[in-house]
Figure (tube, rainbow, N blue to C red):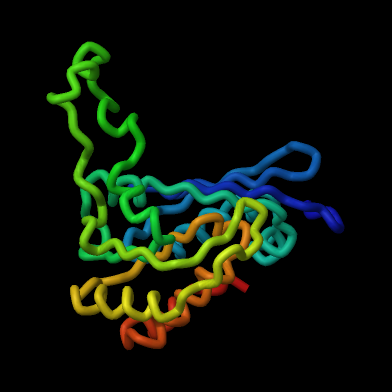
Length: 213
């Protein structure tokens, strides 16, 4: 049963067939739940499996989520989309200027992951996998947030508008935003999002999230 002021840690995993959730209580005990994965509506199976776990612990979904301190979400759907390259096509990327080649270069491990060590030493026979977003659809904009979250260089909004225009001219189906240290200060990323929404009628459509509460 639910204890007053109890806090929970909730982790979920959306698999190809089933979605699983585990709710960890403050005392370390846990309950879990399972639901069918709904590929066309991933938010549904997320809430369904958490609700199943909540019922196992004689709680409601509202009770669990309102007292959750940490929520983890894992999904093979995202992994499969990357591996099979069947996710959203023709994406564009706006990134901090000077880092436009980062995602194309990738990590060194990307050149030899999955092959025998003897093969990996023959550099001419190994190569990087094709980038998820080609270089021509990666646009750099001037801005800089440092490792403490402080704004060092303000966002050059005119460059953002130019980048968005060029990507829209490419008929992209969506625009990703990846600015340095944005997880410490998302001010610039949020402004880029606003500019994208102002310039693209498609991006002005609200993102639908089903509220379980």
